[in-house]
Amino acid sequence: MNRIGIDKIKSQKLANSLNDLLANYQVFYTNVRGFHWNVRGDKFFELHIKFEELYNDLNIKIDEISERILTLGHTPAHSFTDYLKTSEIAEAENTVDGKQNVESLVNSLSLLIGKQRLILDESADANDEGTNSLMSDYIREQEKLVWMYDAFLNK
Picture 1 (tube, rainbow, N blue to C red):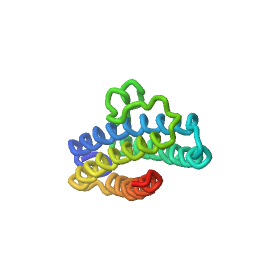
Picture 2: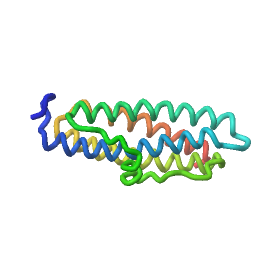
Picture 3: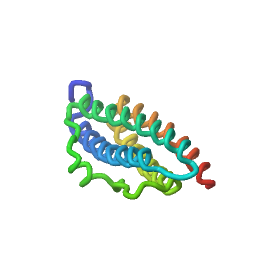
Picture 4: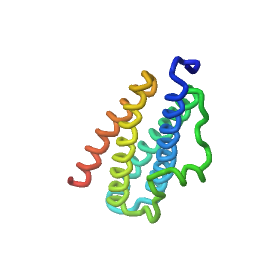
């Protein structure tokens, strides 16, 4: 058992999954910053503010995920090269079209929700309530965001 009472092998598996999640969050965060800086068009003011709200929230989540990895007794990845190798979320380019940016957000959030659901299963198996609670909170928040962004896109 590690210092917080979680099986060391299960803790390592969770840390690996959380590092994968961290890589995806880091690329997503960078994409959203680009959306915020570069969006143009008739929804500029609305989207500029929403993108800033989102990247501020993502920054907090990145820190929480990293600290959870440390709490489990492992090291969070911290190289952007490693993030790019690991992340399933691709870097966004030519980020001026608001509708395309929102589509990208929804796709990225859907991917994150799926990864977090898998971590929920792993954390339940490890009796790791800390990670479980974190993932559960993220999923609840992001499901609502997907609904709201889909409403913006008329879907």
